[in-house]
Length: 266
Image (tube, rainbow, N blue to C red; front, side, top):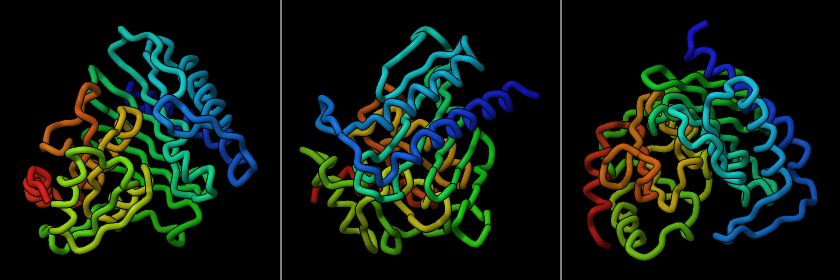
């Protein structure tokens, strides 16, 4: 077994245990708490992250771990796991199966593998840097596992998505609106699940901001392994110390025009 195969097995094991924790809480009557950024958190988020940390610490004790709920362990490690036990807690607590479990591994700050899991539908996207994204359809698509972004070289034909207008603050709102005015249609919602849909060829562009590393790290290999591109709003590679903007496109030909549109003001 190669080192990369061992990492991927660990990532999927972490996603598996998180899914087992999360499923019984879905559409249950859960108490929520507000974090310092006003985002909600539940016992499901915290318990799932603890389980993921335990799996990874047992299998790869030399690696660091950064999670949304419990911070950073072993900050000096060259390899760092980045975890979001429930990306889309608002969707989760309102009974919508559009949240996901995210597991990523960074090597010197660069994502080298990612897993996006939807534990209710059973869908899973898995990718490593430089490889091809694999897709497990779960209960959807009649068992088909086809994956790949679609050809859409023109903004005027593109489907744009963003999780919530609340994340578009200050200068980001007029920039996003300038992009919105050049595309065919825009839709709201989705969290990480929208990036899985982009990898399946259902969405063409996602433009979001106020994103943390645990929000995007797993999505970089997934999107690029399906044929797309994912950068910040200026077309630069995503980095943990970046500005929090994320731009994903299914057709690489859209990247330049989308960056240009986001540089404008509506």
